[in-house]
Length: 128
Image 1: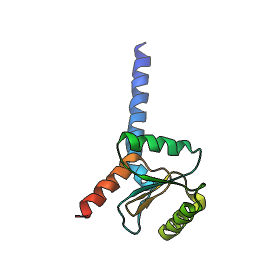
Image 2: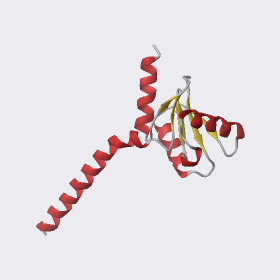
Image 3: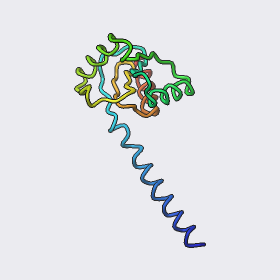
Image 4: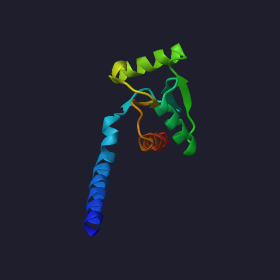
């Protein structure tokens, strides 16, 4: 019995370290590219996207206001997103949803909430 407890502890510690090290890499996997500054948080989503639904709940729980454009329902929003992706050097074929424009900084591929919060805080600090 004692051997199993030690084994479980080792496994938990191992996965804890792996997850902790991975947290710092999330921002790298979701690079942010500065575009034209503005004062909104914009979420580009698509219909029936589970990741988009999760991100909506996260933003609402954190009481972060945002504007959402559903690109498969709004051709203008799709065009706007494509232009921003091209300007930032991203291929729309390699991009996932939701994608965010955080006051002029584009972050594709469902970035973690902490990255969105950090960019919001950074843009608030630099706007004074």
